[in-house]
Each structure stands twice: as C-alpha cells, then as structure tokens.
Image (cartoon, rainbow, N blue to C red):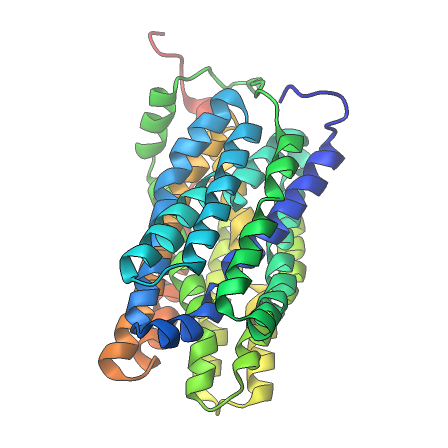
Length: 405
C-alpha cells in the first residue's frame, strides 16, 4: 500500500487499534440502551431489537461496496466516510421518538457507517501492512483491540447513562466517534498490489466468480453467519436477561465488559495459533467450545458469580473466530481483493447478527422468556463446527490461469 514514510506498519496498527477500540466499544454497548429507550418511548423489545438487527444488515450490505472502494482508492477516505455516518447515526438515535426514526438512525446510518470503518476493513489494512508470516498475529491484535473497546467502553457507556441519561450519553458517543475521522487518514494510501508467486491478475468480476464458485467460500459465509447469530444475541439481550432474573442492571454491562477483556487473551492466542496450525480445525473447536460454555450457563443456577465465570470463559472464544476467518480468506483468495471478499463473507456474519438481534426480542415477546433462544444458540454452534471441516485451505488463486490463456 503506497503511503508516506511516516505511515509505518506500527503507526497503521496503533491508529487502527484505536479506531477499533472506540468503534467496536460503542457498537457493543447497544444492549445498555434497550431498557431505558423502550421504557422511555413505550416501545416493545422487538422494536428496539429490529432496529439493531437492521443495523447489522446494512453493515453487512455496505461492507462489500466499501471494501471494493478501499481496494481501488485506499481505505483512508473510505473509513472517514464510515466514521462520519456512524457519528450522525448516534446523534439521530439520541433524538429518536418513533420506531421509524430509530431504524433510520440506529439501523441505516450506524450500520452503513460500520461497513466503512469496522473490524473487517481495519484488518484488511493490517494484512497489507505486514508480511505473511506476521499476518495471523496482527489479525489477533486487531480483534483483541475490538474486544478491549468492549471492555473499556461498556462501563463508560453505562456510567454516561447513569450520569446524564440515555439521550445525552448517545450525543457524547456521537462526538467521540468523530475522532475516528482524523485517525482514519493514518491508514490512507492507494493500494499497491503485488501478486504472490503463482498468482494471476484478476478483475473484480473474475475474483467474485472464482470465490462464489468455490465451496469453501460458501462454507465460510454460513459459518460466519453462526458467529454473528450467537454474538449479537448475547451482546444485545444478556443485560436484559440478567435483569429479568432479578440481578443488577450494572451486572449486564460488567458481564459484556468481562467478555471483551478475556477475548483480548483469546484473540491474541488464536492469532498466534492460526499462524502455526490449521485454521479450519481451530474454528471448529472454537464453535464447539462456545456451545459448551453456553449450555453450562443455562443449566446451572444463575447467580452473580456464575455470570462472571460464564463471561470469562465465553470471552476466550468470543471474537476469536475473526482472525481465523479473515486469515482463511486472505490465504485462499489472496490480498488483491481482500477488503471486498472479506466484506462479502462478513455479510454472512451480519445476516446472522440480524437474526440473533431480532429473534431474541421476538422470542421474548412471544414466550415471555429467552429459554428457546439460548438452546438455538447452543445448536447453531455445533452446526458451525461441522460446517468448517470440509473447507480446503489451499490458495485458490494459484490453481487458476489468466483469463484467455
């Protein structure tokens, strides 16, 4: 990636890390606003859940387009646009009085903004900033940064709600997200593409055709669907679930924060392991461990200490799937269109996030509890573990020949 000399890999990684801490941290705090906003505006939980679910749909849909833009003109301007949209969305969310306003702000604007300045975009920049031997590790660092944001920003979000109320807390978030705009220019630069030995030059159409014609691409897509389904249900509905069980509202924020803290360790460990062992088998193991941790949690009595233990164990496997999935996409399909192809794969994650967010509210409003939703989370983890086993980890581009050859 062509950039001035001061934009060294270290500068890129530090600024990208700060972007992920702020952006992912505030994204993870959505569940803190569920109860105060629904009570203040007289909405059902399904209304709020639907808006957040649509946020993930627009995040996923915009990701491939922002990714193609970044692959062509560079990620700096792409991420600045995304951050500006996120800031405008948080400001609009603070003034939402109807479900339509909530959907437009929390759903459309924030979701589209994350497509341009989210985790997949930053990790794609990291991949081009280091050599292949360090790529899995920097993916782990980036994912850990997002989890650190979850650990630091959730208590801050809960404190701002307590001090200023939910409306002013959202306004403050809008101003803080604007700080991502100057940070994004440290990641600027027009991409310079060098084919690895054996790789061939491709157009966007050829890259998409090759990916969509490969079974492994579809397996990664639907495996990532499960990740989004599980993570967003827990992140959005766990705080309310704990309040329903008679526990303190602050415990929910603490639980999600603990998940983020322990995922820092999990992501760094998986980033190291992914550079040494089969990524698909590591992914299968992570999904099975998620199901096991959730199953134990729902079967034992819910207490404050059981929540802390659950959060710690869940944190280890929380977003540890991200560096492995991103690493597989780069390894199999190359770096030329990594941002775009990762965006397409990430659409699967966001479709899962939509159903995880919406389904939780729907099941609760219909049955009066989250019990069915928890068992769906457990079953989906087993499904994802099996889904990753047939993936072929060989680089696809090296088996191709140039068009017209």
